[in-house]
Length: 347
Image (tube, rainbow, N blue to C red; front, side, top):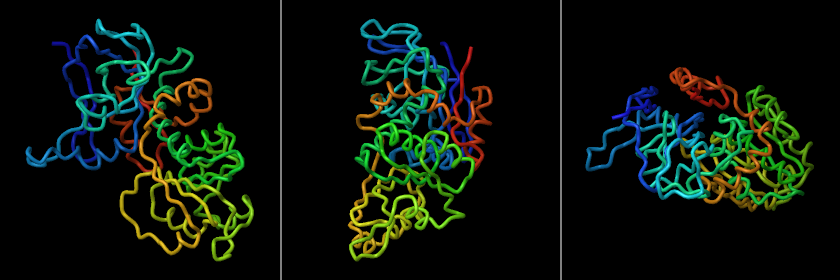
């Protein structure tokens, strides 16, 4: 039996690198040698939990999770029935297409492994091929950029709109990039970490606001002009707010700042519920739009990721070798220590 190394949860806020059986592809499968895999906030959630709950009939105890749902790699084995793929193709993966469960999110396989089995491999559904002009670490951004793209698609923001993105992490910055690439007139990114705001400007945001130091409503009025809510109370002229921060303060700020007819797109996961000022929403006829995953966007983004690879590469703050996986996850677990960590698996 051939084995490979794979990263999984190893208790609360810990990982373990384990030897597991190397998958053998069936007639419809492909085996991908992973060359890079990003670490996501969902991985951190599993680490905080120490795994994920088993099914009730197993007693409900926490069981380990094979981590990694942002992989990029190259095909090294193909089943006899697979069409449209070749050995050596560089691919990104749709983690939600695996029949044995979402890759890296409770499914049988995790992308933070030396090899990953793509079950029922099919171009455009389970994988997409990308050219060798794109480094594997940049290609691994495909999945989170699909999340960001779906949020922007849900916003329906157009060229004449003025948009605010809360949170300058990978999803927020990705959303800012997509907004500018679709021609949105003015995009502001809001955060409290100066280095992240600098990066927001570097990837194309028109302006940034440090909400810990500035009066946000006043600054947005300066940038987007003055409008009003349904009662005629003055409000910034912002058309769309996008929450990629996931804190209650963002929601409350938007309700207090929204003009009549504004939209709020919520893509961040809120760890705790918050009280909603329904009266405030009513006074602005604020539309709340939830954005979850990437129903159609997983490979919609791939050609543009290829085209604008240097711009997206700026999102990566740390590239850490697989041999130092502990350090990679420690960086991600430490607030403010890193923006986007990608684990690399070289020869």
